[in-house]
Image (tube, rainbow, N blue to C red):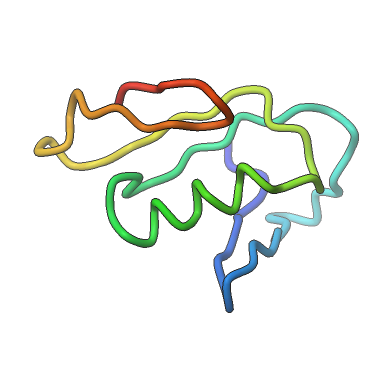
Length: 80
């Protein structure tokens, strides 16, 4: 279930709640759609600097063409 949207605007990430959910101190599973594209890469870069919420798990999604590619995130190599 999607609880928050991360919106990239003017080089910053903004968090938008869905259904009145409030941010809490818990950890979140974040998915980046289009992770190998220019915008996806920028979002990954900004998420690495993000301190507003705790990212427990990250999933990168992309087209079939990018399947198997590796993306760096917080010192880890993640396969798409």
